[in-house]
Structure formats: C-alpha cells, structure tokens
Image 1 (cartoon, rainbow, N blue to C red):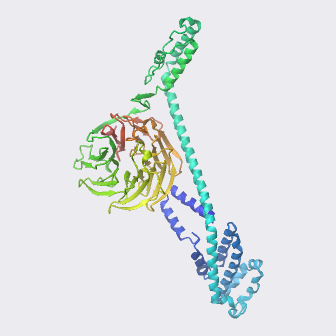
Image 2: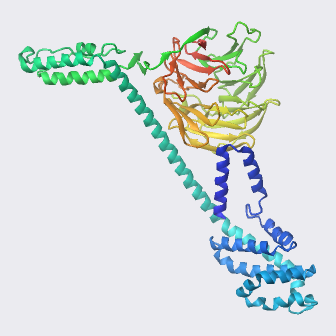
Image 3: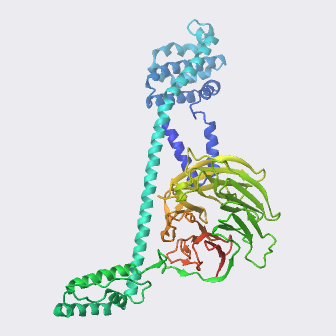
Length: 640
C-alpha cells in the first residue's frame, strides 16, 4: 500500500510537470472517490456486504481478502494475519448462506467447484459445508442453523468493522512515515541535482566569459606581436651582452612606455610605475608580467569607481527616442499599458504619472497621482487600459481609473505586511495577486524584507478572496508572473526559491531552489515551457518547466548590479520583448544591457542616461522599450 501511495505522488508530479491540469483535476477527483484511499472502513464494509456478496462476486471477494493478506505480510500487521484467516472463513460462509437465502444454490455449487480445493487445503472445517447446497432446509439443520441467524450476521459485521479499524490504525502511521521518508529523500536528491546544475552553469558561463576575453586579447595583439617580440629580443640582447648600459641602481626602461607601445589600439589605459632593476633578465620578467596583467584588464572600463565590461556590447540601433522629464526623483518602476498606448511611471517621491509618448494618442488620460509614500509596484489591467494598480510601502493598494481620473478603490494589506512588493493582474479573470512583505527597511534592502504574504483579490467586489499557502514564516516574495491563461502563478523569493501555484485550486504545485542569492525578477518564457529568473547577484537563468531543474540558457550580468551598500537601487528587474528574443535588464551603469536569448551573438546596450537605470519594460507588441533612471527621467526607445 505504501508503494501505491508513492506511485500516486509520482503520477501527480508527472501531470504537473507536463502541464496536464485538467487531467490532474480528474485524477484527484478519482482518488477522492477511491475505495481504498485513506483506508476508509465504511467503504470496505460496504464493498463486502453491499456489492460483492449480494452480486455473488466470490472471485472479487477473495481477491480483496488476498490483497489485505499481502498488505499485512509486508507491513507491521503480521500478528493480525491469524485473525484475518478466521474472518475470511466467516465471510465466505456468509457468502454461501446469503446465496442459499436467495435460492441460488447454483452459485454455491459454482463457488465450491472453483474454490473448494483451496478451502479444504486451508482447513478441514469446510468438509461438511460441501453438502449444504443439497439439503432441503439447511436453516433448520442444527449444524448450520446459527449461520442463518440475524445475531450471527450482526456479530460478523461488527467483527469485520473492528478488524479493519484495527488494521488501518496499526499500519497507517508506519506506512505514511515510510512514504514520507522516501519522498523526503527524493526531494533532497532533486535539490542536490538542481544545485549541481546551477554550479555547472555558473562555471560554464565563467569559462565562456574568460574564453571571450582571451579571444579579444589575441585579436588585439595580432600584427603587434612581431614588433613587440623584436623590441624585447633586442632589449634582452642589449642587456645581456652589455650589462653596463644599465648599471645597478640606474632606472631601466619605463614599464608604461613598454605597455603603451605593446597594446596599441586596446580600449582602456594601463597605469603602472617605472621599475628599476639590477638585472636585465629580471627586468624582462617584470615587464612581461605587467604586460600580461595589463592585457587581461584592458577589456575593462573604469567609470567613477565602477568597473564593467563594455566592449562586447554595441550601441542599440535607435529609430526614435522620447524622454519624459515629469518626475522630480529617481524612477522606481515604469510600465506600458495593455495596448501600449499609455505609460505609467512611479518615482521615489511618491507620485505616479500616466502619460503617452505617441503624438497621435489623446492626452486626456494623462494624470499625476499623489500617493504620499514610496511606490513599490505597478500593474495595468490586462484586458484594457482602464485600471492601474499601485502598490505602496504603507500597506496600500490603490486602483486608479484612467477614464474617471480618480482612485476608485483603496485596499489595505494587514499591518504585519506593509510593503507591497509586486501586484499582478490575471490575463483572463477579474482578479489580481499581491505580494506583501513584513519588512523593507535597512541598509541591505533584500535582507530586510522579512516574511511574505500572497493574497488573491477580486476586482469586482474589491475584496480579498484567499491567501495562497507558503508555509510557516515564508521568506518575502519579490516578483510575480501569470501564464497566458492565468491558471499558473509563478513567484520568486528572497531565499532563491521559485514557487508555482495552481490558481484554480489555490495550492502550490511545485517549487525548486533556483539561485544562491535572492531573486529580484521572474518572467515566463514566450512559449511558457520555461521561466526566466534574475538573481540579486546578477545571474540570469532560463529554467525548463518540462524538466524541472534543467537550465536552458544563462547569462552573468553581475557587472551591472548595484553594490550591496546601495539600498535605494538594490532591486533589479528584467523585461522580455514581445517575441521573447531580447532580454532587457536594469543596470548600475548609465547604460543597460539587452541580451539576445538563445543566440551566441553579442547583445546591445542602451543609449546612456546620466545616472543608473532603475526600471525597464517592453512594449506588448512592438520593438519599443522603456528605461527609467535615477536621473528622474523615463525614455521610450524605438528600435530600427
């Protein structure tokens, strides 16, 4: 039985991973009506006394009793086997008696013909029963009269109930504990595999990055090697044959001169000090070491103390660009509406502005919303551009009607969860989900978010419908994402976990550890067979939803991450274009990277703001993206 329960769990996991939600519902419904599920005593008794015996299914009755024999033999219920043998004899005699009471002597003859030999091998007490179908009034025979009495039937029914109750109570706990331990072991094994895949992907990304640096260095050094080698050989020959040219204590060749001559054409300057040497060989070795170190770092660019790789990103080809300068503080988030005609952008000064970038679009919806506190999240209603949801840091979720130009609803989370980190509208149903956290202050933003609360809200009644289960004291949820039909909700947490919820059942269906750091942003892939996650350490992974734990694509954008000390901008986000081929990520630099998903070609970089890029989004249908910056501006960029 414990193996059967474990198999049921494996079937359920398979249906979840394959996305067969309708089949999963039907499967769960069948399990709920399964006679053996949960060892329900009444259903077993009903099966024996109301189905098998009245319908003369002797074979099924024997199979059921044989099942319990095997079950008790493989479990801790071995002492109950002798009791089961006695109960089996009584139940089979009841079958014979019931058949005679229904004037079906033929069924008794058939029963003994099929199973008589087996019964005689078990016990000789059955010998005189072979004559019972041929007796005229067996109910009056002193040898059989007791079996036809109502008292005997009641005693048999009560004994059967007591026996099965004892069996289930004695064996359920060990069986469940065994299944639980096996499942825990499997879960630990799966987590180990996920972590190993994660480490392997990180090492592969690092190896690819180093190989790219090496190739760039070799290309930049081509055509210079001959002259550099000749210069070093002549210098070495001069120092070897004529050591008096540079006597001890006299400064030798300046290292900066050698470096500048050897790495002409490389981006970045190499700063060194002059080296004095008493030996020509030592001077050459020192020069070579400095040259190698300089070449390794030549691909890096310094910018106000920030060092990041830039040469492999070309400027994006822009057809048109508009800049919105209506905010007075750094941008915290910006979002295109469902049609892409309107834009909502929020600032750290507690204001949300609705505006349009297209001159052909009416400006009648343009507005400024004063929230009086920090805005942490924005989301538009998915079916129209009519409603905008605004999540704040003081337990408030405001709903702005762009046609009426007013707040039509003010919802409040509990005081225990004041920070509304994300809100997401269902693409199909009139509901939305809010991710609230108990914290949100402190020097390190992510480490102080506290615990999580996920609430589902009805957008018709504007009331909370349910709270999605996350367990006891769950880490804060930072990002939410619905699939195309709103049946699946993905949520990322500060402990590096990704959670998946079945919205129709309101239950978590799976989850796995995706990052060693907190996860800042999560997105479904274009075909929804994968999901993207962005860690606060800059690691980007695309996870397969058909093979949990498998990484399909990854990038390391850690050089664009904010330092841990920068609490205002420590929450990164990413956005996919309409085709799912370009991934735009926020940046601590004045430019943001745009990666090409599943493409070995280099990506692009956005045109520069004058401060870090703190918010990004893509147009729902066109190659147009948004970038919000700490310089208080929002830009709309159309690609050529």
